[in-house]
Length: 394
Ligand code: APR
Ligand code: PHB
Image (cartoon, rainbow, N blue to C red):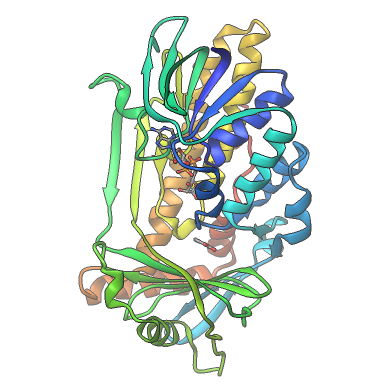
C-alpha cells in the first residue's frame, strides 16, 4: 500500500491533519490502535479557542459545533471565598467555546469517512522505518494481516504514549519536562450547570474546576494525589469535596446529579524538540503535553497540524524548504502555552502540603490578576488563544 502521508493516531491531531490534507488535495491514511467507539467516547478536555473554532468552521467541520457548542465570554476565578470574573471578550474581543473533545473527534471521523478517507482502527504492532530516507514506511498489523504502508511522510499524531517519538534514535531529541505533585479527579455528572461560566477555584483543601458539556451535563474536577485510588472516592465524598472547594458565601450552590463517568488525569509539562526528524513529523501530544489548567492541549494540537498541512502543501508545490520551518513555527506557540499552563497551575493548586509562603504568593497573584486590567488582559489573551501568527516572522 502507498499513500502520501501516513498518519499514526486518530485523536484530534491525526484526524484534523488528514481532513486538512484532503482539502489541499493530499492523500493520507490514518492508523489507530483503538476502536472507533473508544476514540469517540473517550472523555477529555472541552475548551476550544476562537482560532480553533474558526479553523474547524472554515474547513467545513463546524456545523454541529456551531449548533451545540456553548460560547463563553468570561471565566471566574474563585479564591478566599469570593468570585472574580475575567471578562474574556471585553478584554480581548475573542471568546471560547465549550465543546467536548470527543465531539470534535466524532465530527472529524464522519467528515473523513464521508469524503472516502481511510482510517484503519484496531491496528497493532506499528513500527516506522526509513524516516531519514525519501521513502519512509509504516509496518503494522490489521485484521490479522501484516501490512506495509509506504509514504512520502509520516505524521506521528499518536499521543504522549505512542510509538513515533520513541522510534527516534536516542540523542536526536531534547526533552524538557516537569511533573507536578498532584493530579485531577474528573467527573461528568447528569446535572444542569448552575453557573453559566467556568469556575477555577483556589482553595486551602486544593484546586477545583467547574465546567460543563451541555445544558444538562456538568464537568467537574478536584485536585487529588498523583496516584489517587478512585476506589477511595465514593460519590458522597466527591460531592462533599466539590461543595467545600467551589461554593462561596454568596449562596451559590452547585447541583448534584448521577455521576456518568469518572477518571484521574495526570499533570505533566513536556516538550520534545525538534518536532521534525527527517520525514517524520510529531504533532499534538506526541510532541508536547501541558497540564490542563490552561485548557491548551487540544488547541496546540490543532495549531501544529494547521502548520503541518500548510508546510506539506508548500512542499508538494515545489517549495521544499517549507518543511524546515514546521518545528520552529510550532514551538513558539508551544512554549508560550507551556508557560501559561504552568503559570495557571502554579497559581491555583495546593503545593507542598499547603506551604503558607506559597499560598500567600498565590493569593497576591490572584488578587493582582483580578484587580489590574493589564494583568487580567494578559491572562485573557492567553486563555482565549493568541492569534495564529503569534511568533511568526514579521
Ligand atoms: N498506533 C496507533 N495509534 C496509536 C498508537 C499506536 N502505537 N499509540 C497511540 N495511538 C493513538 C491513541 O489511541 C489515540 O487515539 O493515537 C491517538 C492520540 O490521540 P490523543 O492522545 O488524543 O492526542 P492528540 O491527537 O495529539 O490530541 C491532543 O489534546 O486535550 C488534549 O491531551 C489531550 O488528547 C488530547 C490532545
Ligand atoms: C473541561 O471542561 O474539561 C475543562 C475545562 C477547562 C480546563 C480543563 C478542562 O482548563
